[in-house]
Image (cartoon, rainbow, N blue to C red; front, side):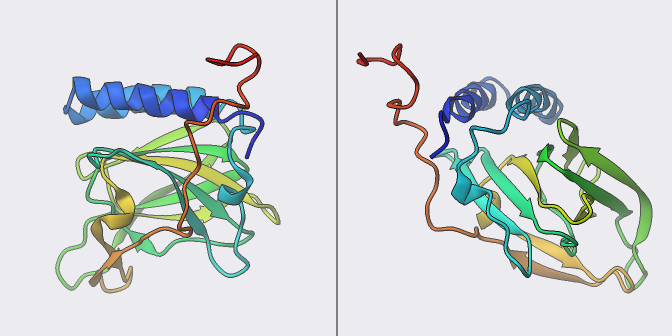
Length: 205
């Protein structure tokens, strides 16, 4: 476990309040972006097992899923040269880079039988935020942009993203194939053990 997972616990508590207060997507994106920007200012809170790269493909570790599946928090770990297929999300999402850098290439929705049209590529570096959703742009390809290094990004989605049926696309034909991503591990961080929070923890000495 990290020295203290308190920043993630605070983020989850604040996100729970946010989704209780509003279901407006614009408010959720703005509010979540503000909270995530604060979370990714430091990285010591991320458990080591949620930061492990795989030699062959990127990893998607669940950090927290709201019990009512109103949002989920995920760490994406990118080894050198790793990238996603072109895909969508079908729900809102906010992405923040914790370590390294990642590139994102956005695509316009395809006309039937036509190639996807790229809309441009941007680079996110540590501390920077991006958003996705069916209303602001939902189709992209993401890649590790830190040459020879591992990159890690923290993603927050408006659902239990590992259980959402969504799509990968052939960029040359626009053909879609549905998938459910799941997660890379069967365990999640323990947010509720306060024994590493220092002498001021409740009940501590």
